[in-house]
Structure formats: structure tokens, C-alpha cells
Amino acid sequence: MLALLAATTEFAAVKPWEYMCDSDVIGLTDPSTGELRLVTVLGNAREVFGAVFYRRASGLRWLLSTLNDPEESPNLDNVAAMDALKVELLRKNELPKQDMTVLKALDFKPAGKGEIWPQFQSALPGCLPWFIDQDEAEQLLVDLPRLTSFTTLFRNHSDLFHDRSPTEIPFLPNPMPNRLLEAKDLEWRPLIVPPETFNPFKVSDAQLDQLRKLKREPKAAFEYGSQILMGSTVLDKGRPCYSRFSLLVEHDNGFLLGFDLCLATVPFNECVGTGLVKTLIKGGSLPGTILIDDDRLEPILGPLCDIFNMDLLPSEELEGLAEARESLDSFMGSGPG
Image (cartoon, rainbow, N blue to C red; front, side, top):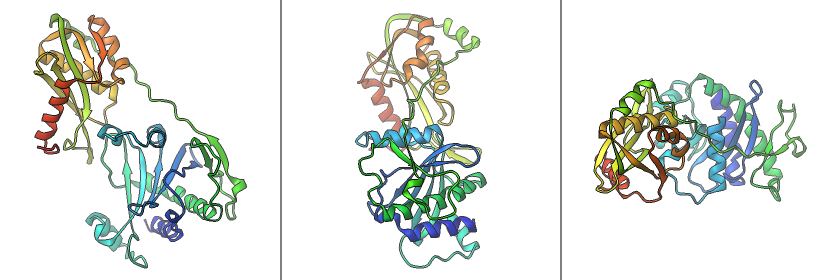
């Protein structure tokens, strides 16, 4: 922790937010594993100061998708998909008690005033931001000094990103040179993360037996959706995680037929597949049509629906499902009611 605090102090002293934007993305390669990571500097808007290190496919996809479509309205499913480490500089009175306890134990006293007190956070898919662990601290100890080297270079070469495509990213050399970083050391690479793919839900024999016992209603249409809602956090292995709610609603009258709850850390296809099976069993029948408002559900649920001759149809507006979500959201204390 002392080494990490020293690296953070050196990074903060450069004040890269004065000349860098969060759209100036830097690429890093892990010297041990070869894993690619992307880094952005926060603070140009003078609101949040620090840096975010995006990792693994989920983190890279989250960042690049956000940069490609900055006007898209964020939702909790998107937020919960983030995989990153964050170093943030706060005012002393903004620092959470647990973080301040650690800094006091280490007798850490930064010089100056304002946003100079460091906080380290870990974001994993399906989880709320949490404290970093040993492996994550070691990753930051590798990445943070390299970021500082780049920001020092950028301060003297503010035109680095001029005439570059948004998907073209400067990757730092691996290993880093034993001297000041130079523009010629950078390797510019076009980086486009492939779209996320979803495997079909594998229904078990026991689940098939239960579904076959249900009565069939060929003319009926049900609305189905699965979404993370605010106020639905639970502890999983000591870490706070979001919960995903799967809802099944009768299309004609908006009657709620069933709901299922699972941890947001469970793979998406498994969560929504199990949710559909459970809510159908709860509802007591198999409809002729299932309406969905999320395109991601088509490849996941399509094979299961084919087995029982249920049409799986995308629909942009599902009033019954929207009302059920709003009611549940309000009940849990996060809605306007």
C-alpha cells in the first residue's frame, strides 16, 4: 500500500487532467500475461479526478461502446457490466471511513489541499464498486507508473491524438524503456472489441419434464424480461452484488404471472433462461407467443421456445412488463414513488 500511495502521489503531481480528456485512451499490455488493458484519465471536467484501468473483454467492451455512443442513455445493466480498477483523488471529508482508517494507519499525509486523498476501487461485472485485493493492488503498481510516464509525454506533445481515428489507440512499449518515454515508442493499433455473444440456454431434463406438464395456450401472449434494478444489492462472498429480476407478464391484461431473482454475477444466459423456466412454471401454462424487449434474449431463449413451438418476438414497447418493473422498482425504494 505504501508503494501504491507513492505511485499515486507521483501521478497526481503531474495533474494530467489539465491537458487530457477521458476520450484520450491509452493501451497497456500486462508484462506477465500479455493481457490488454485500456486507461483513461478523469478530471478534465473538474468533477472527478483520477484514472480508470479497464480490463478483460467486458471492461474493454464497456469503454469502447461508451466512447462510440456517448449519447446512449445509461442503465443499470450497462453500469453493472464494467470491469475496471479506479484510482480517484478526493477531498479529505469525502473519503470513506474505511479508506481513511487505512491511510491513518500508514501515517499518510499528502501535501496540499483539495482533491489529494487517494481511494482505490475495484469494479467487477455484476458487483458494486468495492475495495481492491492483493492482485489488483499489484496490477495498479504495474500500470500506474506507466500511465504517469505517458501523461508526462502527452504534456509536451498535446497533438498526439490529432488526425487519429477514435478506435486507434497508442499502446505503451512492453517493457518500458529505461528513460523518458518518447512519441516514437508508442505503437498505434486499431482496437475494435467484438460484440458480446450469448450461448443458448441449456435446459435440463428435469426442467423439460416440468415444462411438458404445463397446459398449452396457443393464443396467449406473455411478456418476458430480465433486468437489474436499484435497491437489489446482496452480499456474495462478502462483496455487494446486484440482483437480476426476471418478470413474466400476461400481455392482454398486464397480470404478473411470476418473477425470479438471481445474482447479477451469474452468467446472463443462465440467469434469463432459468428465469423463464421458473416463471412459466409459476404461471402454469405455455403461451403461443413470448414477447421480449431485449434483443440479447433471442439467441439465448430461441432454442427453448422452438422446443415448445412458442414464437419469440422482439417488441419495443411492452406496457405490462414496463409497469411491473416500475412497480417493483418503487416497492424497493428506488423509484419515484
